[in-house]
Length: 366
Image (cartoon, rainbow, N blue to C red; front, side, top):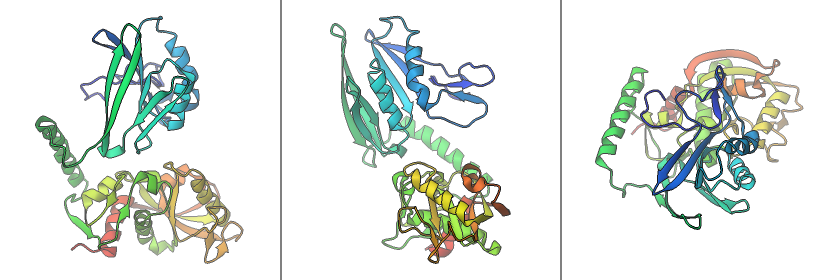
């Protein structure tokens, strides 16, 4: 934030120590284009940092109503909300606050266009990783105070020519990133695997937060490989740890793996009572579509997560303890943090390096 040269707008995140806007951000901005005054506010999804205070999603509508009272009548013509929120919260905002003219949002990773509220206020979200962008054109009738929006969802592909100056800046940061990875011991351009025809490692957000894919199975396989000496037979990971939001095919490099698993989550071996393990898995199933959905191998369900089986035995009632490979993040953010769960070994290996090693064996480089 301190290095950026543009303005940060953050309407619901504050410095916990001072209760002022966090960092260099401002709570709003009014810009004027051809005599049309546009008020911009911006909202961020709830976080966990102990140095910040959030107005959380459940309170945003009421907070915004009070916040808008600080602007005298006639002080702006158009109200734009930039959001990184659940779409359900976006809907709440436009349903309860008629002053909002449109929302430019994010978070769900998939393109969305819906209209909600008494004014049928539009909510727009493009796809993540710049697979698509929304192009919005606006017309405002000053006399009638009417806004019209003409929007196009455009695919970003190799057919779109690069803009020279932008490409220069992007390449600068890309090369800087490569050097950073090399300093951490990676060889980003080194080939890890050559996937056979017909084998795809699906890392799309919608896939890894709702189902077990070949990619989640491979990552879990890497966790088991690292902890094999501790007798682990089950592996768990949260879908949100996979960030690539794409499908890996053909030749896979270390850079592809770094894009897939950028977080250096360390691997841990646990001894988990069956009833706790079943609850963790069922909890994960109950939050499909979010980053805490749990991918797994070594256990199965035949009834959408009500019952979990190992070798046909219901683990929830087996009174057995199971050796599980997972990440420190999973332990800290699920019921794996139960006092009845024992740590067998905290390893120094990360999920990223484990996946590289696993794929090199499973699908050797060509």
